[in-house]
Image 1 (tube, protein in one colour):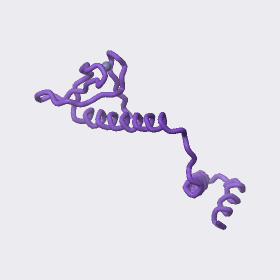
Image 2: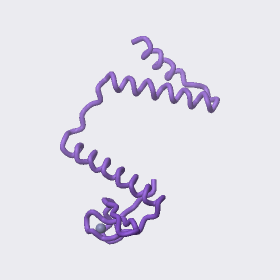
Image 3: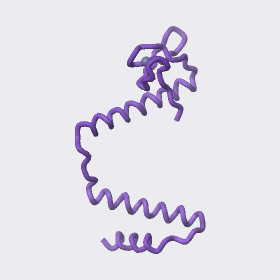
Image 4: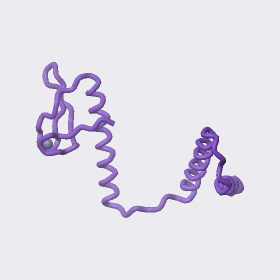
Length: 111
Ligand SMILES: [Zn+2]
């Protein structure tokens, strides 16, 4: 992902503002203009802003709550998916699938 940051304060929290015919990228923290964006950069900057917002939200939530435990059924489902995709990757690379993976896979199938 293309990363953007303010070259004055180093903040990664930015926003896009139209300025006449040009589109500018600005710093949310200090208000400094970062750069003008062309069409493709505009999209990259939008992706970046969305990414930062998501990361920020995540940090805020995690900061408030102690980290909990993933429900067992979800963990099991994810584990099963991981095993299956690992088997597929090994299969594609023509590598022997470790027997403990197969055993674990069979365990899941039984339940
Ligand atoms: Zn700044």
